Amino acid sequence: MNHPSKASFFFLFILLWGCKADSSTVQESNPQKGEYYTATVHTPAGEQLEGYKSSTIPTFFNVGQIGSDSKLETIVLGERIQKNKKVDVIPIAMFEFQKDAIDQKYLVCLPTDLSENPIAQDFQAFMSYNNELTLAIENWFKLQCGLGHCGGLDWKFPHKGLLKHHIDNNLH
Image 1 (spheres, rainbow, N blue to C red):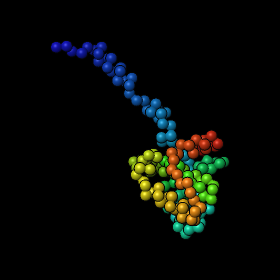
Image 2: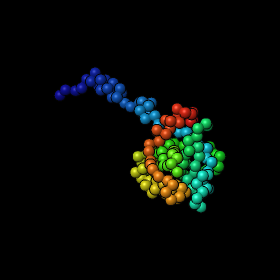
Image 3: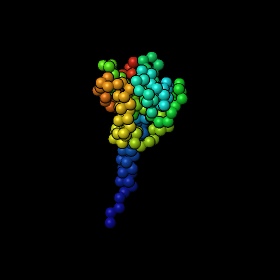
Image 4: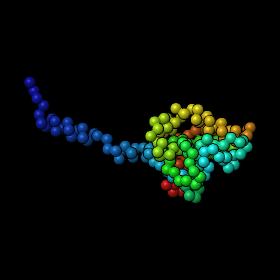
């Protein structure tokens, strides 16, 4: 009966050790995963959003801004957050539409303490498992805009909007 030699075990060990995934390599392959930003909330959930007061229905989400100069509007999902509070958020989607032919963009985010929620860790999961939530956000804005004043509602990966603002500003 033939037994594997020590050299064979050593070779197998080196091969397996060389093939193991290095966590920094995995992180570099998807640089947006786990990246967070600091948003300042200007409209807590339950209050009227400035510029959208045609209906008496308040927001059911927090609204804030990321960035210092050219601010990126942000919808922060989760519990009510106090006005002017800074909160670390993870982007999961970009919601875009036109209001009276003017492009409106909102980066949809989760606070970092809610980021372990498996149904909303990334864009695909968010769009797959949260159809009611995305429709509720769309309908809230449609109701606020008034009949025929909102159009082109679209959900996208957050990376394009973030890339533009990375170039223009330091968002972190």
